[in-house]
Each structure stands twice: as structure tokens, then as C-alpha cells.
Image 1 (cartoon, rainbow, N blue to C red):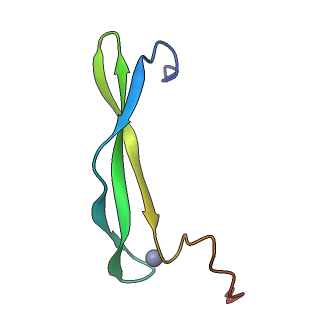
Image 2: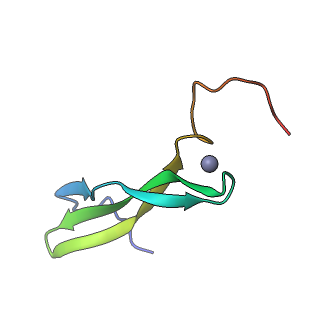
Length: 65
Ligand SMILES: [Zn+2]
């Protein structure tokens, strides 16, 4: 694996899009593609996803299973 941080000129994310959350069993998540611009061109680093329900940091209901 080469280090993706070396030589990165810039990073960019795509528009967030709806994504399926298997925990909520609904399209409550959002995901974005993360690209990095290298001197050699654009490269897809990966996709980030987060669910607005599961990953809500303000939800401190204490309903741990
Ligand atoms: Zn969820």
C-alpha cells in the first residue's frame, strides 16, 4: 500500500447521496465519495457513510443493547 497522503494536492467529496442503513432498515444514511487530487490525477480514496439516526452524537438515550 502506498501512502495516500504523499503528494496530495487537494481532496474533494462528492455530493452526499442517500444510502441504506442496515441497522435502521431505511434510507437514513448518507454517503459521499472522497477523492484526492494527485499530480498524476484524481484518485478515489474511498466512500464515507454515516447514518443520521445511528451516528447522531446528540442521541444519548442510553439504549445500549
Ligand atoms: Zn441507522
